[in-house]
Length: 58
Image (cartoon, rainbow, N blue to C red; front, side):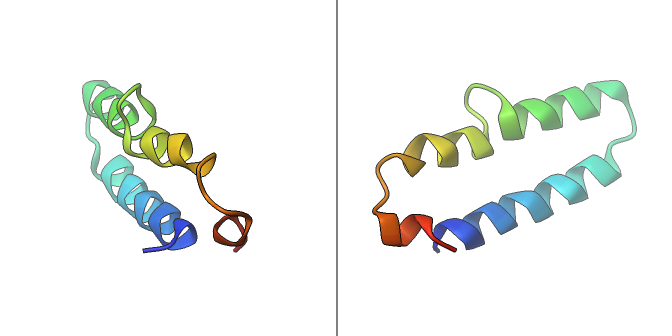
């Protein structure tokens, strides 16, 4: 899976989970799952620096 596909997958999953959140606790948990210290988006962004220029382009 390339970077664009991976980001799109994370985006789609985040939208689905946010839409199904019914409480503030659900929203906080989802926020941490995606943009927390060990979140999915955070993990992808940490790897961007190691990608080649071709891989970074859409």
